[in-house]
Amino acid sequence: MAEFSTLRDAVAECVHDGDSVALEGFTHLIPFAAGHEIIRQRKRNLRLIRLTPDLIYDQMIGMGCADKLVFSWGGNPGVGSLHRFRDAVEHSWPLPLELEEHSHAGMANRFVAGASALPFAVLHGYNGTDLACQTNIASVVCPFTGQSLVAVPALNPDVAIIHAQQADRHSNIMLWGISGVQKEAVLACARSIVTVEEVVDRFEPHWNSVVIPSWAIDFVALVPSGTHPSYALGYSVRDNAFYRAWDGISRDRDTFLAWMELHVLQTDGWAGYWESLEPGGKL
Amino acid sequence: MVDGDEMAVVVAARQLRDGMRCFVGIGLPSVAANLARATHAPNCVLIYEAGTIGAKPTKLPLSIGDSELAETADSVVSIPEIFNYWLQPGRIDVGFLGAAQIDRFGNLNSTVIGSYQSPKVRLPGAGGAPEIAASCGQVIVVMRQSVRSFVPRVDFISSVGYLDGGDSRQRLGCRGAGPTCVVTDLGVLRPVPGTNELMLEETYQGISLDEVCQATGWPLRVAEDLKVADPPTPREAAVLRLLGFK
View: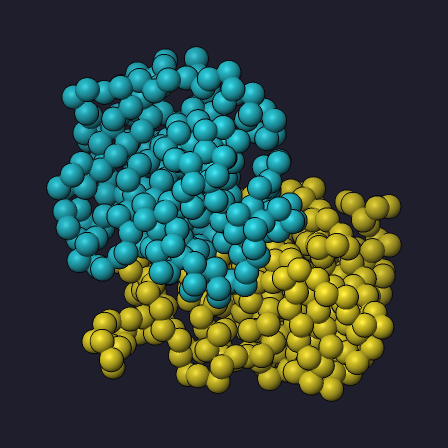
């Protein structure tokens, strides 16, 4: 059974220095509040895993939480570069960042293998790319047809953290809309935290919903709007203005550090972050 | 004088036929696909890699995961499903891609400028593109043309086009035909049958051949019957404004 907890206690309990950690969410339902809490607790030497490291990983990398990134697309969607990610790769600031790079299809299948307790997954992929020479894939032959396929190693992070719209009283969780690889990430990892918008008595059926039963999760923490500037369908809208503004905030090291100090390090949890923003949650 | 970006999306949109199933990336490709759906190809199925199948946005999304894409989709599926069940088996007709660099054989780079180990510029990475480039029935590339982006050989092959030309793509065993059309702000290039080297086939009003050659990092082959693409129709221009383009 998952335990209801504060986010602070859940992160302190689950995330240790040196852990491999997947904060998943494909544009939608990105667990920003949990990422901030990891920064506040000054976790170090994390191996960050995620298909689309966006602003939250940019913040964690820039604050020196990570020494390795396992990923497939590291940009600010629709805006441009992740400047802290680039600074780490191009100039080792604040620390060198080791990369393990895949395609989305490869990463998705790595999580599927991890969730299935298989050592690897197979796919048609990476054909003719230079990525094939830079990453940890292998060629395997189908024992039935003789066909050549690409094998990608399973991902089994120490910790998965996701955000969902709802938990019920029994700490089952439900999310809907764009569902990414969150279910696979939770089932592939050793420990998991789910932050939620709301706790309800019982779930109403939603089109296209994903339910993960309580016994497959470790901690559930109530953190309304805990995805900002990402969003939770039915609860909030994506703060596209924030994504655009981040380009300017993150471009310069000092501006970035000042922003993180004011909005994350000096704030007391997510409620404090929210209050530190101008009214309406905007910058 | 025509607007190059506007011409690129209009010409790219015209490549789509009604009912085609399109895997759409954000930026100019997304504008082109939405323009097609709002004009001559109302039954085009727009698929964004976040898992939204049959999205029908009324405004151009900023990201591939904007809520309107999920709210208007016929189906929303997980990331493993979109790649394994929908893209990999060849169910998608057209993949729309952009990149930071393209070479004379249509290979695409969205990973690094310079060497991989110590890059001059670290770009976002391949994302969904390698398998889109391999598995879609055909690929339409939409990007701005300059000597920096149109290079003899890409610094890194993130997504394969025709590799070294000739039949080298075929020998890789990719399911799809590869980049059949490259639409830029200066013109349209298509692979020459046999060698698969990109050749300029169309330019736009007010764009000189010299200008296109100057913006290409290799000696550009030019079609004998070089055409000039029709400028945007009033309807195309009006729809682009409605979608919120520029």
